[in-house]
Length: 455
Picture 1 (tube, rainbow, N blue to C red):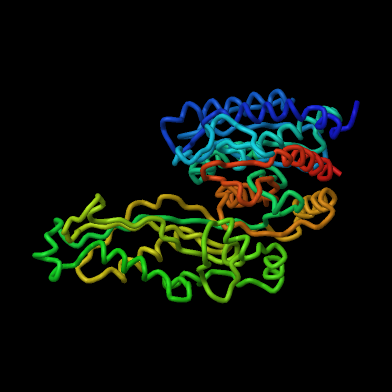
Picture 2 (cartoon, rainbow, N blue to C red):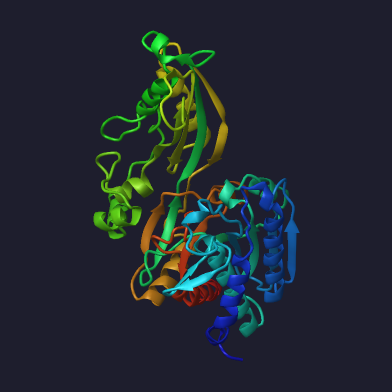
């Protein structure tokens, strides 16, 4: 039989066809109308694992969207690798900004355009195809494999902990390979060693029982819209530092090595501004934009509204206004504690005459940082350096993969992240894309990682 690389080379067209199949399934986890499609996608993943040769495949139910479980343990005395990914995707709104149908994959200028192609259906398809190629050229995978493919990552994995707790023995492993990630560029590998946690809530501010005529009362009573704007401004000083008392208490300072790694992986300011479509930077002074993005905690105002929203003018003094905030957290911070501190801050800084209430936290997850130089990082670093001809960048993500901290908490295992989305690939945005040439690269690197881990 030929090598796994030969098998991958001969099956590229078939593999892309499979990727297009899963991209056509609108597995939007946050919208109830798509619940049936999410389940259809779970079945697609389960069927694909079975075709790859995984002998034990099962769809595990949750209170919302299912987890696809797989088990292929045929390598005595070898490590057990838990492969993680998700098959759900973000909504497509605003639909009018898409050039083509988000659920009909289209290739233009070497890029595949579709919702979920970068985050992360291409990674899911390629890792399963890599497993299949390695196993069929060797008779079995070189390590023991367990699969956890969920349908709730885009809504902060609310039932992942329940599934892991209920099936702890079935998911026991030595380490995790998370495929939910990206690379620094087409010709530069990257290892993401940390992900931020997140907490979010809605602050509701009320100044009275009814809106009032601004001519009769505007000079005499509090204005809820003005009050909420003042409250929003109270979260940061002019230097971009968060003013919530106790917010930085548990933050671990960046070391010289951390800052050197950030610098090595740094995107130029011009490139970053072009990628983001902005004209200036903002944030906590004393840190580079890259350090702030990956290594410092943040509070963001995500939405603010109150009073008259229609066309024209309405002379009203509003009595109700709202503020949505999220906080991205770094290692050692606790999302529930930070939510409590934000609430305390809002109550303390509410203007006189304003009543503050809170909607339930919209989402919450703990930050995760892998221990440096553990077996997963060492193997991945060697594989990526061999493939690209240079050491991978070591990076920290500004976003969150909520389940990684859950794996650590419940299973006691750490995660190495290897993914192949590229900067600017519009994940979560209209016209999401994935570079077609990354497809073969992903399959090769995932297969090489399995082989190297087995050795």
